Length: 201
Image (cartoon, rainbow, N blue to C red; front, side, top):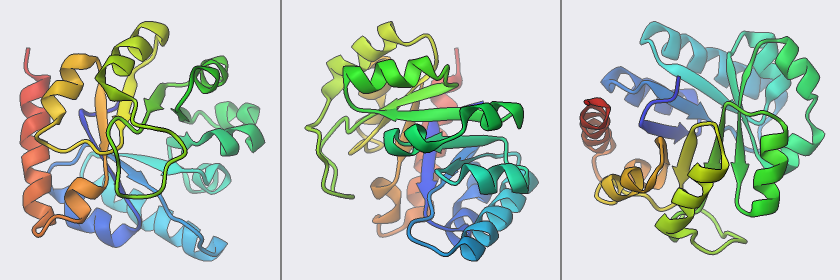
């Protein structure tokens, strides 16, 4: 189950810092690491999340996720093209997929995902993007086209979050807004409070 606040972290150390603060959905995105480290990071993060009732979503490493007992993975378009969806589904994993264009959305929906992500919503400082900011109107369009939950990602701050949710996003993936904050834990607590308010009827 996706929560409104969906932080993405690079390692288990970050998971240990923020998951106990009330985070209910977390993505582990390990980049350019040896297989042994990837497995170690997933195993440690999974243990942290399990202890705190948090859903762990493993980015890209679907084989390791299956082997270590994770329940949810996220794939970018390139990783989706090379993934064995039959094996992923046979293992009972839930699946999230990144999208940036109508073509990518069609490819993603053909895989029957449990959610699709749209980004970048705003200009992002995290990495150079091939795609311009999507904007709030595109969120509404994606919501109409996709029957599954929609995750908004890219340049979304806690201050921008209400507008993103009003536009139709079910969840907001966040990296820079808390990782680069002078007090990351305080910023995460702000997001957790925001998510609590958003869940109220």
